[in-house]
Image 1 (cartoon, rainbow, N blue to C red):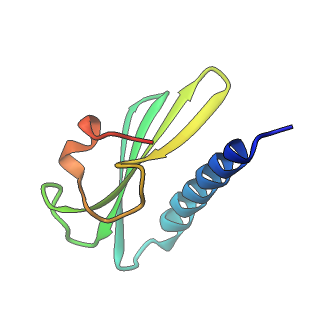
Image 2: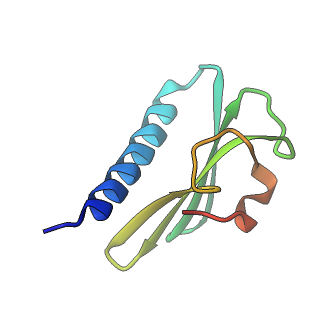
Length: 95
């Protein structure tokens, strides 16, 4: 049986994944999506208002990583705030 923490963590991952999918469906909306496919096992997703610079601290950034059969989606700074710099995505802390 899964612990409460494992269930909460799973719920957070599912919520992040669903948000990524929803944002990708939006298309011509007010939010732009950037995807950096570093490798087949590492991708970054960035969300900000259309026209935002990569150097501005206005991005919500998620990292998708695959290790064996486990896929994890983590958020920069451990939250979903629009306060990160896309250009710094590889050096941010993810949880």
